Length: 213
Image 1 (cartoon, rainbow, N blue to C red):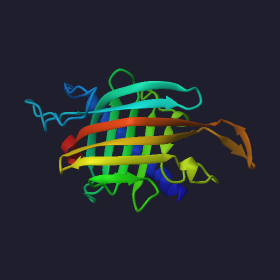
Image 2: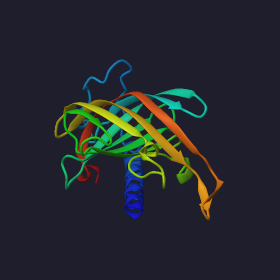
Image 3: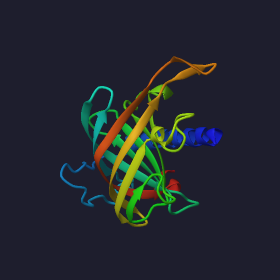
């Protein structure tokens, strides 16, 4: 289980890096909506580059009670093997924060991690310019060893619209940062922190991985 989780997270990190590189290299002329997530994105611009959608959320760091309003671009990918699995990337425009989320299965409707067969795995970068694994917040199964499901975090999504090339919805998350180091069963260093994401909304295009080649 733990080896599979580490492989999954490593794959997501690699995909996130590829998405970030792709997003930075393209003409980003899409602006996140402050009031709603009305579907205004286009499939491509006149140069043939893929367009980006929008995302927003309120981010609260629970250990300091600091809150930030996140607005950014959004892009998504559909799994080539499973059309009901999507990966979403939200990248901040005014700050280097970034989210990487994988959802399965996905269809229109409301979903909660741990209910039914819905699964959510995700990474939150408070600063995507750094790659320190001990500064990542995670959500998903078995994030912290020998703890109950509360330490896996929480995830709720309401997918209001889903087509083959676009997804739109709202979300909330509780994500966990675990920098603890144990030796012989005793805590040597590190801590566990939480971040809450509320009022989340996204409206983004969906592409297959081959569209980014």
